[in-house]
Length: 224
Image: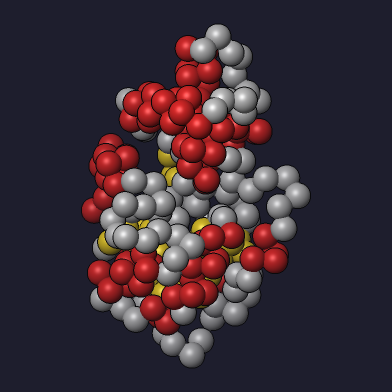
């Protein structure tokens, strides 16, 4: 590495946390309220990283703009009441966070999820204190794929961007990291749709499970 790695930044949904049970669950409730059957879980799961707007559009493909906006407001009401019912760290992630902390690496989160959902979720799961910084989708004037949230996270963590690696499961994560001058890893265990060509996103590597992050670090961050 040209620059020593000092911080690991994570996307939230589909990278750090498996939020699909609660985000898809909220969509199921919303569809039931509108006399519709739940969608297949795997179909809805692939849209979770793209947020509530994408999920509601998936659940109500024939709705017009105004109805979609109303449905999204109702979706967020439902979801905010069930933030951590089934949401957990991805398997193995807890041990990875412990190892990273033991190595004195700063930990951070950069997500497009709004802060009024991000902060309560982390608090309910007892995770907030483990991260030096949390930058949400409404923390700044820009959000991913713009590099500003990642640059702000590095500043809050007190490390240069070149000494950070960003882990995410969407193309915008790799775009933001590249624009910020950070290394990046694709979390292929996250919410990728079938046939999604993540190799074309320009990441510096990929991990198929959280524990593989430690292996990537052990090899100097030059591969998986």
